[in-house]
Figure 1 (cartoon, helix red, strand yellow):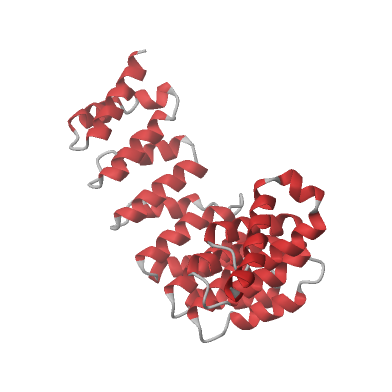
Figure 2 (cartoon, helix red, strand yellow):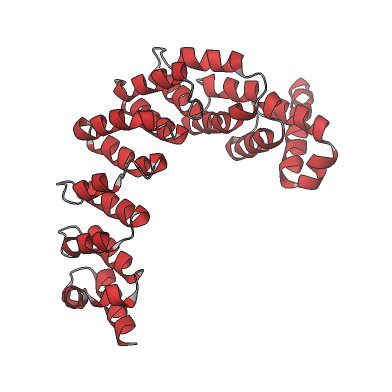
Length: 292
């Protein structure tokens, strides 16, 4: 009987939390009380509800959300996905919190702690902070022993948008393992400045031995650099040994004007005999576009 009595308040709390996340009007009408109850419900809610509560608190109760989010980030009993989610929400909230220094100090200590999981979450949470001391700590994580930490550092440094990170990222691009190289390529565009001319980096990796990097380079080059020179670089990609590269190259051509597409008619006709059925269909559609 005692267990039932203990469970009832918890169930009522979770039910009210579900009502708040499902009804913006109810939350708005009772915001102060709702925030208090959502903070109480956060540690005991299940995964999907907990994630919704984190979003709501991060959006409407930034100052009050910081400590509960940090507690989840630190909690080893929480699932990795939940801890990562808390780190992402902290990254979004901290720039708008008036007195965030106490949590920032804790996160900076976490950046150099022995636990690689905590280093990774702290690195993610600090992905908004470009002040020099934190920037230096984040750049050091590019050389962390743990791959997950290094990937988080790539994302956070590019999220800061600080071009000072570019030389270090290019250095890592030369010597890092494949997954890290791919992450760097997919994040570099966030540092894009007219004076940096990052397109030459993507062009280089169009000829890389790893098909994953050729695919990434092609996607990013045509995303950020849609000029005639880029279209010419697509030509060898249409006969790439990896069908994903061939397919993406054809899709990029089909996004171009008919004049550019027509310049590749011979290469497109060869793709009618491709071993991949999706590429065959796309090639046929491309030729129909030219006929019309």
